Amino acid sequence: MPKNDAISALKALGILLMVWWHAKYFAYGGIFITMFHLCAGYCMKDGYLTDAWTFVKKRIKGLYLPYIGWGVVFLLCHNLFFRLNIYHPDYSQWADARLYSVQETAERLVQLIGMNNKELLLGPYWFLRTLFFGSLLGYVLLRLIRRPWAACAAALLLAVLASHFGWGWRNWTWGLGKADCLAALFFLCGYWYRKSGWHVENSAWVIIIGMAGAAVGVRFCSNDMFTVSARQMIPFVVTACLGTFVVFATAVVLMRGRMVPEWVKRTLRFFGDHTLAVLTFHLLCFKLVSLCIISTAGLPMERLAEFPVMTTYAQSGWWVLYLLVGAGLPALFVRLMQVARAAWKRPTGA
Image 1 (cartoon, one colour):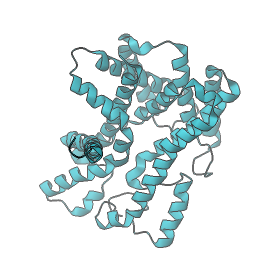
Image 2: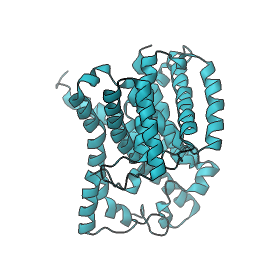
Image 3: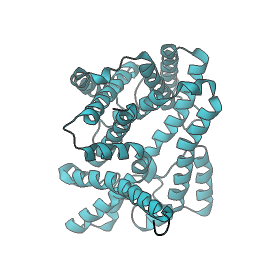
């Protein structure tokens, strides 16, 4: 099995778990995001350590430009979303659920360029910001210190200091907050793990032990990169790594399993290669399910603004449809675009 297959499946399971977290709206989902930081470090090529410009360009192209590009699109659609009741001051529980003036739109655009603001429907884009700054910080630490384990220790120290002194991502436009330092730590942990050659994801025991450890961890420490305290930092990191190992081992089992249908493997590869589309559009797609609930239950249209889902209904079973629509529609759209482009490029009469 090619190594990229397992990584694609890991990313696919990670994005599906994240959509499930938002669809079910339960408390232990923050742990799923850290696996993408670990995965980014795991996939970093050694050649980048002597080619900083290529590494930075890939970060800009893969993280910064999508953040800005889709941020501008959703910002320009804000007033339209407000008029469609996707944003509403009585149901959004969000201070910015109002019409923007031209001046306010311009101010938010400037903040967006500094990755310091985003629309509510792009709430998960905080991940792109932390991954962008975290990977750059992790790269700098690795270039300065050279030894991955020592770079991890330095990132952990920075995260503890950021937590203790209250550094935050809103204090400075280009400042390093606690979440950015933790993202750097996870990025470095992923790189260190690959270089170590341990490959514990190949052991079935890691699923059992990892699930038990992660279950205990999320019960007794914060699982959110923004709220974890300095005292909880190490348990949080251990819990996140265990959770990632469990998902990684599951991905390996699925991609290696002879009893697993090939269409399942192809689906996982596809989702793993198009996580950005799901990340960007799943909250907007959730609104289609909320419309179904409103129509079925005869509810006021203003409740469409409930975020991220209509919690009472989601927790009573509608989360299944939220999950299917939130993950499935963006992936389907990407696939249809691929088919359309292929048909457009096909020579006439071919």
